[in-house]
Image (cartoon, rainbow over all chains, first blue to last red; front, side, top):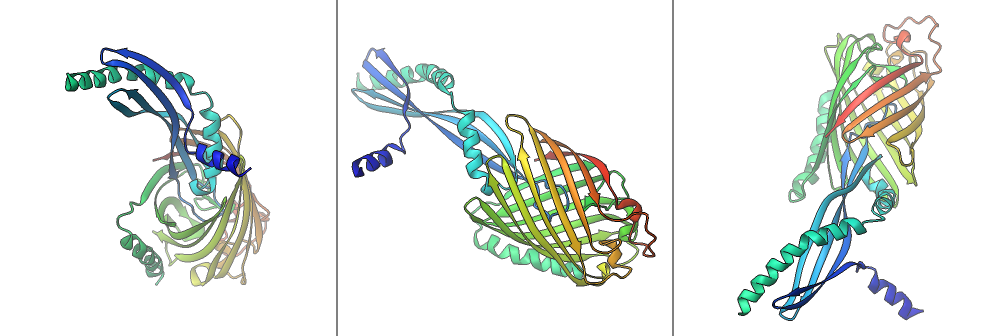
Length: 141
Length: 246
């Protein structure tokens, strides 16, 4: 039981590999893993004001998709964070602090299927990765 | 005497702000147009269109806000043109609970007599799935402009309709006070009363559109001697509002 709990604790901070590609470069084969995470930004809107009038308090949230690339190459590891802003957004009445758990659930359901977005970001990254590899190639030649 | 109390409240708030200068305050604001400036079921703008603007800043649990609204020479406020609500508060989070204490100063411009008054209060909010519950109490100590003291107890709920931009909300409140003199009729036209509000809001980006039905159990046909009671504008009505938040 204890190793299982420990395993869960260790596993929790790491997001699963969402996408993997292999690039055959002149300097050698490169295996790139893309791990996704979601960054949530909260913005408190409105004034609290005492009861007796319609509340204007509202928490607006915006979720950004961040994909961490880790490319393993004989010369080392190439890392980069790719970001796509506002893949999901919404708002909830009230204070942001009181709504944090509810918004986390909103974000989870709105970002359930990000595979397409991750693959698109990884596709855009291929060119960048090749450029980085070319630089390494130039440095070692 | 009244303005300095509010200023003192803001000065008290400024101390932690100065001590933590490296933490940036979060600022937000908005402008709103409403077919009525309604408070506790009573019209503060003679059932006429009112524009308002507000600005709020929060840091480390402390918050300060200022709101200005047109009150359209309301007889409830001795012919005042505008009201400034200046508020300073401090909130605590206990799990999904948000508890908050605050001091509010209501300052009127263009009134024929001194109409400003101060309130203190506390409220709490709790989120449970899409449902948000809130409740609180606001107390105005004995002051000349409101003819005595005034206590407001209120409770409400708001629920976001799942997968739509609509939020439905409702609230109920009860106002009591220790005196029933001419000035007390300003916030309690015929004495202690109950008010309610049900509303629906549509949110798209920074724009919020809302419709509310507000009402009171005040007998508006009763004869009253106080010029502040404004019974014509103390009954049930429907109001619409549009807000732009930034």
